[in-house]
Image 1 (spheres, rainbow, N blue to C red):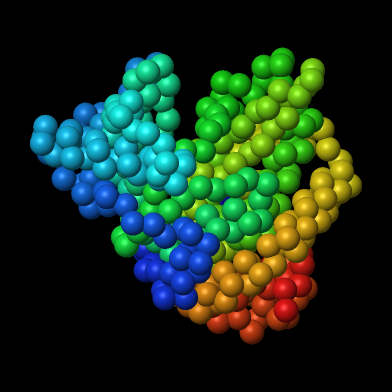
Image 2 (tube, rainbow, N blue to C red):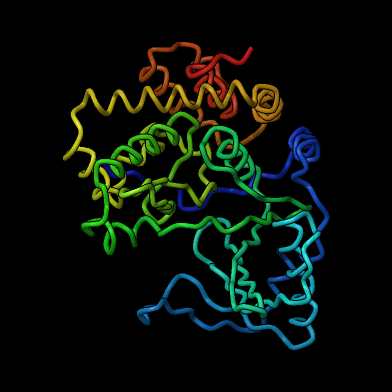
Length: 342
């Protein structure tokens, strides 16, 4: 288990015109009444505690009454746009809380929406625009078994809440409960590990993914879902794109080692690559448009690009990596190893 060092501060990359054209074509760009900078106008904040009374990385933002009234209406409209293209009635909705996290690159706001008729609640996130993140979201939507719902407007990204138990919480509180099928969970981690590496999604430590469980007759099906896409193809070391190499993920790695022989792990990796190839075929024209924009982008620095392409060329025994000058080109060669996109 090697230690991976993530860059302390990854720059936010602007949206290029080709990427904006892509977002408009696939209805990802919509005008919204509240932007990220509007939420920055809170006058103070209160540390947010978890159910056990422990301080979290989040703090609840406090706004003046007049500003909160305006935000309440705008955020309800955004929620309606996000979940139903603006057709949902919002009179029975209310903004229960706006939380802010100063940790990490995206410094997101998390908005809690409550249905006053039945006290049911939901969340969505408001974040600063970053082209890296948008490419990460799109690749997740196209290449993984999970659909991603988000929208972009000017300097703001709106993302739906991804349901599941945070991976770090699952590892400490849920993992060894008798109800779990550890073999199925180990298999899902192997598949998740392969998906992240193929599309070069980095920093998948346990607190950056969730475990979603679905009852299936007398068993449980597991799906591990990434929830942070800031580190899409930015870092220069190959192992950063393997979740298996993070010490935070040791409990999941131990499960795979406990229940699976190397031949079984290889079988599941081949299965996942085959599934990704099918998804690429289904979305062939969409992924080609996405990659056409991505191969022109500045999504990392020359040092990282030079280092990563050499490591991947050696890993795959594929010299075509060495011709790459952009991170998008490296991603394209990785995807072509799964399914060739002319």
